[in-house]
Amino acid sequence: MENPTLIQPLDFSREVPAEEAEMRREGVTTLIKLFEDQIIVQHLHPAAQLVVLRHGQVVVDRALGEGRHGPINAATPFLTFSISKVFTAMGIHRLIEEGRIEMDAPIATYWPEFGCRGKERATIRHALLHQAGIPAPGLQRQIFLWPFWGAVTRSVARLHAEYEPGSQTAYHLVNFGFILGEVIRRVTGMPVDRYLHRQFCAPLGLQRTWMRLPRRMLRETPKLTSDDNPFIRQAARIFNQPIIRCALLPAASLHSTARELATFFQMLLNGGLYAGQQLFQAETIARATSLGYTGRDEYLQATMHWGYGFILGGKSDAFSAMGKGGSLRTFGGFGLGSCMVWADPDADLVVAFTCNGLLGEKNEERWMTLCNAVWDALL
Image 1 (cartoon, one colour):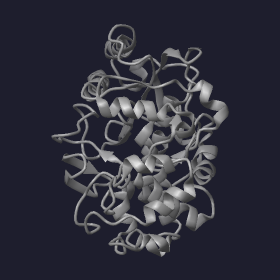
Image 2: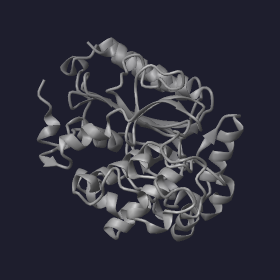
Image 3: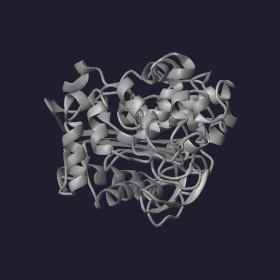
Image 4: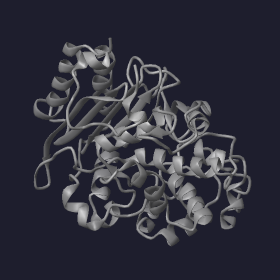
């Protein structure tokens, strides 16, 4: 089926009939009911958005629930947490594509102060695969530095490696963004949020996506809620603070909508082509979404399939939130107990879900319920 987004933007003015996108009408109806029930019946989150694209067509485009000052809509920006890593990683991949960064060059090539205390051999590849050696040391103390880019990156540069870079994989919760964001700043001379806006957001017409949320937008983005999980509750409390919510955290601060996340992933699914613009070479996206590491992640204490800035699908003892149809070719980004976006090239499918209710153990079930309903709806 011809993909209309190759030559024109996604049309969010209507949902196409399911059959036009090779989906079952009753399956899509079931999906929408599940989405609504999570808010109205199960009270898993106060507000959420859901977008499903098939063959570059909008099959589901829903927004429901209450924000700070009334009902939300499709333009309401949500905090997406670690989906931020996808955008930051693609900024690095753009610079690799342009020959301004080399994948296997030491990080210190671009950020000399980083090359100390056991981190001298840490490379860009290591950073993308969570192998740079500094997953989350001193996280509680570091939080006080988050609003101050110069201070937090100086602190990261001085950290001792917890293991020889490349010898282990351990999820770099926020340091992923500080490392790669500072590399982008050093190479381009621009803060990472400005660089990403210029390279991706503006060309794609993403007007409700920010890596650093403007303070004027605080009123429009829903306040976070949480369940009883202590870590999740603490995260909600921290990220509800305006000074943190508006800080530049390239691993955790992206605010966006389900529509705009889906637009970005549709571009990736198209091999970098969207509405007549070639934003990436197809080879760049193939590399970014390829399997870089599969095995145990020492921070998450589980088996993971890591791409170069992406989580990949496929069977895992820790992560199968892309649903029953996911494979190692399925690539996505997932935000702490809340938001998700993924694409599958074989099914020509994009799913984006945003919400403001952080969950602990119940979150993967929430994601899988929606994702399995999407897979069940395909013809």
